[in-house]
Amino acid sequence: MSLNSLSNRRETGRIATVRWAAIALMVAFALPMGPVHAMSEKKEIELGQEEHQKIIAQYGVYNNKELNEYVNKVGQRIAEQSSRPELEYTFTILNDEMINAFALPGGFVYVTRGILTHMNSESELAAVLGHEIAHVTEKHGIRAKNRQTFMEGVNQAAQVLSGVPGLYQMGQIVNQTALMGYKREFELDADRIGAEYMAKAGYSPDAMLKTIEVLKNADRIEIAQARLENRPPRVYHGFLSSHPDNDKRYREAIEQASALRVDYDEFIQQDEFLDRLNGMSYGDVQRAGILRKNRYYHPKLGVKMSFPAAWRVEALAVGIQAASQTSDAMLSLTTTPKKRGVSIDDFVSGMGLKIREGRTITIGGMPAYIGIADRAQTPFGIRPMRFAVVADDRRRMAYLLAGAGQYDLTKIASDRAFISTIFSFERMDKQDYEEARRPQIQIVRAEPGTTMESLAAESPITNYALDKLRVINDLYPKGQPAPGQLIKVID
Image 1 (cartoon, rainbow, N blue to C red):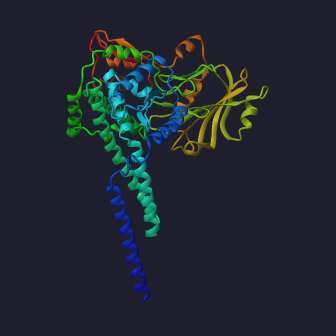
Image 2 (spheres, rainbow, N blue to C red):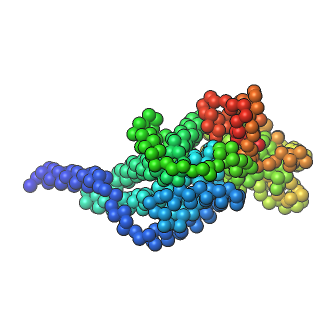
Image 3 (tube, rainbow, N blue to C red):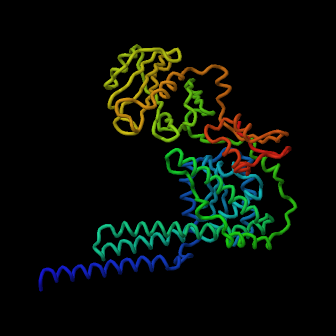
């Protein structure tokens, strides 16, 4: 047999094996979800309890006893009408700004501050909780886990049988695609079943449609902002992908649940629901310091500074980092210990930087040093870096401010913005401490002439205040409040 014939035979066998592996993956994709009830209820609850502790440790519980009790009351009312009322359901408000709600096996249901911010009635809250309770009753988490485990086994077998490097990676992509598909399937299933649960509890399933639209609008503005800012969008459930516009079958399935609705004479009216959100924290409470508009306060350290308009500020492990709207320039603020008696020049010399245009100055009444460090390590790699060191001898620490641009070579494109921000750094005064409050939701009644534009101008929201205020009040994209209407503002 010639070498060519042997090679051809091997290649033919190789192709056949690859085809078999591909068919195996396709068959696995088409198989039913597997033994849904393979996990006992006891094991399911144990799994949920174990993961519950991790969730609480990661996000923390929002410390508002009355609001937590209220969410639990609404959730328990719906859970009683579910197909698994015997479960002991736990409803928790997570202290996080993300717009999300989810459930763990065994009856653990979570809503975040962020998603509550976007609710405007008890019925809308009931829609979110009913949806998550349906995930529990239908064991969607367990079913998805079973499918994923099965698919991984098929992928590994396909790789071994084919001997083709990369086939397992291809299988992982198929796996992720399948999971995304099941996610849509499960989400719509939870909507339909959740609508039935809430209807039996006396809530109108129409609130499910309204709630989904509000959350889709939140996704829309986040995706648009992320595109402007050159960053991945922070969307969780992906309401736009799982609930496309003009999906008649989905709408009909929700509306059919209305036939199951029972009377509920103890409904809390919309105004009373909004009152329960009054004073709720808004935004990122994990960030060190407080951001209002473009002014950053750190009451514990007693300092403040201003960032350029449209920049966004995020927490670092030890400090903060501000990024330009298009993410091509960044400036960080961190602190480091400084021994008493060490001069600012000696301190900077010990930093090991190759410095040009450096000089000793005063910033905010404190001794400081400003300059440019050539070939410094920055978030964009080795770049020229505008930096400043401000010495706080009373606290025996130094503040380090460092800015760099993504495309800088020797010059610094955003140097003017960096210098302006650096020179805005100063100590807080008495009025600053009064201003340095964490933003909260306030419920107010719109007066004649009140516009969303005027409310956005007064809001401490840093970026896109008008769009965000409209979304949380269900007035997106161009709505205005009616005189006398209760609305949410951020103060």
